[in-house]
Length: 247
Image (cartoon, rainbow, N blue to C red):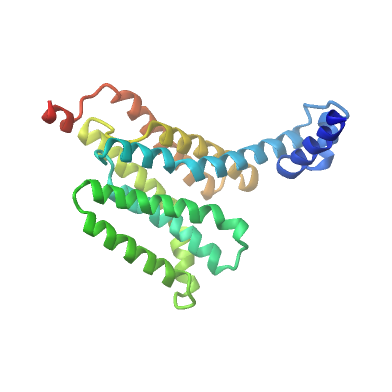
């Protein structure tokens, strides 16, 4: 009885999140696992789900690493600000276009995390007052961006420049790591989640738009993420300036 009830539930999950019914029939009724169009659909769905989950959770390990260490050493404020700019532009664009909350709800959670990350960088660098002021100013700006006072054209430009902001953000952090010869309190888990998410975006972009400008920007962002992951391995045994001073 339990097994009989479980099969429709599994089928419902697969049809809801991973594939249309015709692909379900190809895979599980005809056992045609080499059906290329359905494989592409299923892979796109899996990648899309991974991108969403990985992106939503990516900053949590980074926040935990900073709070646990009581330090934001090695993290670039400029890099964090550009990341916040990128996701804020996307969120403001979705709200301005009147998209349902299901299309941008996770972005609100990400924005909160990245805003907190910026505050923590300021706080652990001895500028708590500026950090609090930053939160107030940012919330005010987001209110203005999502209100009718801001022209939609300005919001569209902000959204379109978001991909370049992401690339610039990662390049700045790469330069910070190179100059400091260590990765400080950067979280390896966060970097890995961002890197794998970037790979997923390339795959989805290729499926949806082919070799477009969007695919190129996702590829450049992914390469930057790969460099950050490589730096994490390269500098993993490097002693930090703050640690040497304490010793």
